[in-house]
Length: 129
Image (tube, rainbow, N blue to C red; front, top):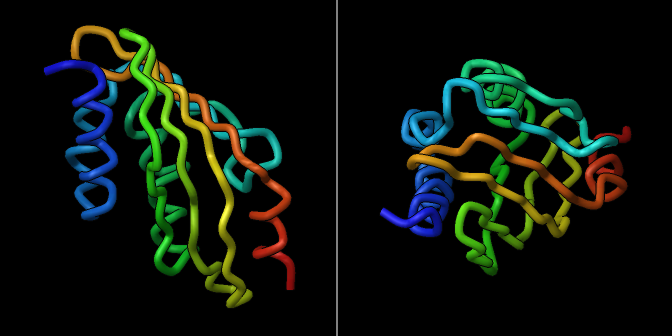
């Protein structure tokens, strides 16, 4: 399977709530970086850290959180995904939509690095009471 197809399949799995499939694509030593200013900012190492630090929080703190890709840019071992986040922050009831860019580094059929870029101000507006 090509790196592009593997990344595309990961977004399809995430959209269906198939977190085990998403985690299976992550290498045991993945470095997953959430953008500075994002509520979960920082670098998480390993699938379990991503699950606990990012995915579980998205699932419990947001209603209908989605990361919907608009475009995939295939550069071999690097795949860039452009798309839109959306969701409603449960504690404020505020919704948001923000563009994102995700940079994936894929080797031997697994993601070894993920870096998120997004407009964190739009996200923070949803968090404010």
